[in-house]
Length: 216
Image (cartoon, rainbow, N blue to C red; front, top):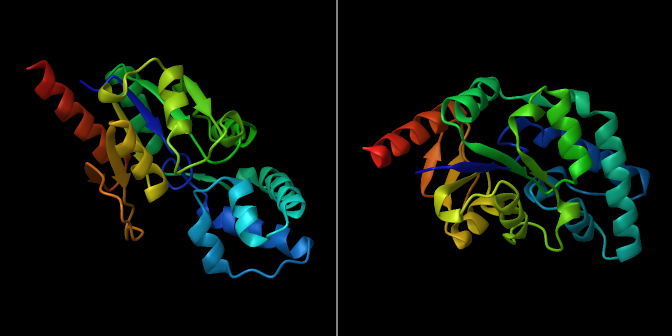
């Protein structure tokens, strides 16, 4: 029986990857770092600090870059787009299935809360956990473990839903049901998700099916 779901944010609930890439490019340009757009895109899913460390080997400069990037991103947070089926899917999962829901993201809590509030879906979630609340970022499972603890759901009775290896690998290590959201063409992945869905509508149908089988 599925009792709770922990969602990744970027690329799973909201269409924001290109905005992350763009604001990384802008922040790097501001501090005089020349970066390749495709290289940056491949890093989305890591914490801002870990991405910054990949872009410069100077720790002080990396921390300054991560802080600058967050400021630029928050100033443009209104540009983030909620995937069209997400609101209805969250409604069915939260109120139809009675699940406890959380977000576990590589961005900090301030950014997670800003995105969810701007998109009008914060009320669906019982907890939000960001990179600033854990000591190790994805793909370490800590951020997901903390989220599961906050919604008081056993890993064996939970799903972790995301769009990259940074979500699926830790989900598998925790013993949860890992679900890869593959919108259109999937990113190349070396992890092995338990299930692959095209969007959150398909996720809802999967949860309904699994819970019906368990209750029967």
